[in-house]
Image (cartoon, rainbow, N blue to C red):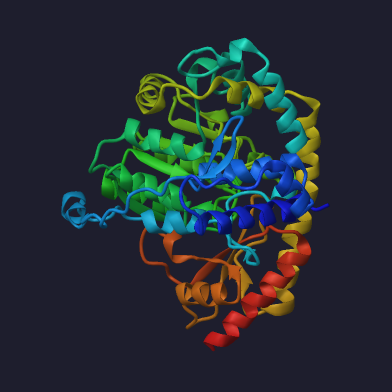
Length: 465
């Protein structure tokens, strides 16, 4: 018996009956529905609960299930006044919503910021959450900056330059970014960013009222001489950077440039916000240490999240800094949401300190390598005119240049018609891009599906020629 199909049949049956009956009409019993649809009582109960939540039926204990009263119909309200009260829509909001949209059934996702569900360590997460839920202390209010043992783990991951007291736990990397921009700047200030860079960082900076100035990056990361020039020209005091497997282009900040970037930041009396989102997503070799590991004077603000390498539902990250900057970050986090839920912190700590964590990372590395290679092979096979900027040694994405004259936004629309989701390169730039690009994700689908996705993308390209 297929419980999912039975669930759909029961729900449809009850919806049809409720639609044609008066409020208060008694509906078939669980026993009748079980026999009629060859469904288990558990499945029938799930169907009834879903329809109760939808407001279509009413369950009366000991009496049965009845058609719910229909709410009174009211004329649609006139909400047009809100357009005047709210003013212009924030820059980047639509792009973020498009980036986070869930792909429709039958659509292949070549644009996603998260791992395919097959790569989530579900058993390990479930076990950790179950253990956390059974501990009464996990449900109590802890320190607003987060559990000390979890903060200590994040501090060690930063390379030894930070202590547990310097860290604060956040509900995901995006929340930490928003906190940092608001805590370390004032509306109207300038923030420097790599170009291209993470779309979520651009949106968060603009939401904080900041002026975003791009600094060009290449296959070796941000260009230090242009960063120094940007500090001089703008007077900026904050630079946002992803030194490791940068999103979207996958570059790693070259060894020779690390010192030059640090020198430029130090000379400007500025902070460098290091977004180390992909440290657990290494595919080849060993990643260099975080910039925060070699920061004697407290210029680096360090951000690390577990969401990308575990699962979207594990919204646990940490951000850390020394001195007054750290104090401001902690104060800002308190104003945002007090603290991260205790059971989630306990489960995260349980996961990353268990043998299952190393096993997951080893398995993940192999899977990401296979998927990256499959995407690159599919591009060579079906779209040789689309060229990767570099072969990423980690992360989740491949940044590809499009042939001259091919518009990235138009291609994304044409690809959607072929039931494959890709994301145009334009929103990843703080200013005008020099050429058209796409960000293609290899982590959200298995190799055979990636091949079919590129095949569909090739049809979209052909349709625009």
